[in-house]
Length: 148
Image (cartoon, helix red, strand yellow):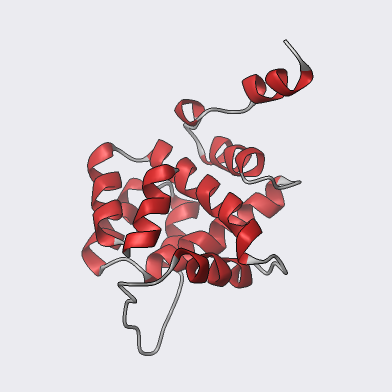
C-alpha cells in the first residue's frame, strides 16, 4: 500500500461521524482544510447559507436533527427581507459560503469544504431528513447535496 492509499484509508469516513467533534474532523479532512477551526468557520458559513436556502418547514426539520452548535449556525442568520432563490447556481452558493466563512477563497475551492459539510451533515441525520433537504434546494445545490 503506497502513502496515498494509506492517507485515503485513514480518513474519517461518513459512517464514523457520530459527534460534533467527528463532524469537524470530517469537514477538515474532506474539505482540504488545515485546522478544525477552519472546519468550524466553513461549517458556519455553509449552514448559514443552507438556512437561507431552505423553506421554513425543512429548515426546522433539519435543525431538530442536528446537534446544538450546528443548529445555531443553521438558524443564526437574520435577513430583513428574505426570499429564497430557488434557482441559485452552485457557484453562487459556494461564493456566498466563502464570504460567510471569512475566507478569501474562490468558489472553485469553496466547493470542497461545502461538499464536506454536506457530507458530514448527511452522516448526522436520517435519510428522511436528508431527502427533504435535497428536494427543497435549488437544482444545482440539490445535486451537490446528493453527491456529498
